[in-house]
Amino acid sequence: MSERKIIDGEELEVSWEAIPGSQSLAVTCPCNEILYDGSRGPGKTDAQLMRFRSLVGMGYGEHLRGVIFDREYKGLDDIIAKSEKHFYNFGDGARFKRSKSDYCWVWPTGEVLYFRQIKREIDYQKVHGQELPYIGINELTKYPNRKIYDLLKSCNRSGFLPEVHTPKNKDGSYATPNGKPLPDLPLQMFCTTNPWGPGHSWVKEEFVDCGEPGQVIRRKTNVFNPRTKQREEIIRTKVRIFGTYKENIYLAPEYIASLENETDPERRKAWLLGDWNIRAGGMFNDIYKESVHIISDFSIPKGWYIDRAFDWGSSHPFSVGWYAVANGEAVTLNDGTKFAPRRGSLIRFAEWYGSTGSVNDGLRLSGPEIAAGIMEREMKMLKRKIINNIPNDGPADGQIFQVTQSDVATIGSKMAEEGIGWNPADKSAGSRINGWQLIRDMLTNAVKGEGPGLYFTSSCKYARKFIPDTPRDEENPDDVDTETEDHLQDELRYRVLDASRKLTKGPKTTHVK
Image (cartoon, rainbow, N blue to C red; front, side, top):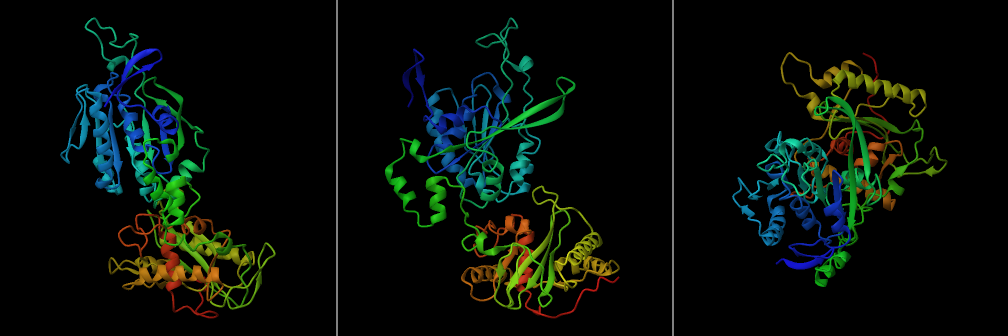
C-alpha cells in the first residue's frame, strides 16, 4: 500500500521507498554496470526491480525495454512475486502478462520489463540483436563463467534520440516539465549476488578484486560516434555496492537465525557476511591449501620420472602439463626450502595453457604447431637445467587419435611426426568420477603427509587459478561442471589416471622426426 509523506516540504504519495544504505545507493547509482552483492537479505531483488521502475513514466515509452534473467525459470518466481507486490501499488495501469511467451510487465505508456531464463550460450540467441537498455541478472554467481554476461552486453543498447523521441505537445514543444529534451536513456547492467556459487571466481575477479565497494571503475575507449560522425573517447563505468542484512528492518530475526545456523562454514560466511574470501562449493576447495600444494620451482633430479599430459583444443583452449614423479628423495627448492614428498607423489612443474585470455577461447593452433611449441619449451627446460632428460610420452585426450577419414592423418599422428608422441588417456566408463576422486585423494595425502601427494610449482599459474575453484555439476555433484573452463582439470585427470606410467623408467620421446 502506498502512503503519503512529507518530502522536501511537499506532501507526496509514496508507493515504495528504498531502505537507507546500500539499497538506496543501488537504486540511484549512475554507473553502467552495477553489482549489488553482499550477504543475503539487504533487499537486492527489490533494488533490481525498482531501478527499472524508476524510469517508467518519464517519457521514454516503448524505448524503455528491460529484462531480468535467471539461470532457471524457478529462480524468477520470487522476483515476479515481489514485482507484483510493488508494481500494482503505483496504480499506473501496469499489468503482468503471465504466459511463458510473454512473461512480462507492460505499462500503458509503452515500457516493458521481461523475465527470462538464460542458462547456456545457445540461449543468448533468443535475445541476440535486441535493444535492451536495462539488463538485470539475478544471482550472477550461478553462472559458471562470464561468457553469458559478456554476450548480453551486446544487447545493452538503445536507439533513443532525445531530440527526436522526447514526447512533444501539439505545438511542437517538448512535453517535459522543463520544456527540454529528456536525457539519454541510460544503459544499465544491474546484477545481484552473494559470493556463493559456481561463478564465485570470475565474479570476484570482475567486480571485487578491481576495487573497494563503492569505488567507481572507469574504462575509456576511443570509438567512432555515428551521431557526431567523429571519433570520441567514451567512458563506461562499473561499481560494486555491498549490502548486509543488518540494514533491512523488514527481515524477521528467525531468518537471520537460519543464516547463523548454516552448518557449512564457507556458505555461512558467504550468506551471513557476504565474504568473498571463501572457496565456494567446488570439487577441490575443501581440501586444497595453497600453503601445502604450491611449492617453489626447482630442477627435477635425474632419478625422477617425468612426462607430460595433454587435453586437445582448438577453438577452445588446449592444456599441456609437465609432471615429475617423486622417488622418495628430498630436494632443495629454488627458495632454499627442503622438499621431501612421499614416493609416487606427482608434481606439476610446468604448463602451457593454449588460451587467448578470453573466456574459454583457444589459440586455434594445429596439432603440428602445438607439437612444435611443446618441443621448443622442452628444449628451453633442458637448457635451463629444469629437466635433465626429455619427458616421456604421457596421456592425451582420445580425440587426437580419432580417425574421421581413412586417408587423413589423425592429430596424434601429425604431432608424432613432429617428435611429440602421446598415449591414449583412460576415458573408460566411470573414469571421470574416478579421476576426480583420485585428485582429491592425492590432494588430501599432501595435506596429511600420508601416501603419494599432488603438488604444483608456483610457476603453474593456470593450475593455481583453475584447480581451487573447479565447480561441481549441480545435477551430479561427483562430477565437474562441464560448462566451466575445465580443460586443465581434464588434462590433470588424465595424468592421475595413467596407471601404466612407471616411476623411474619408460619409453622416451626422442624429438627426432
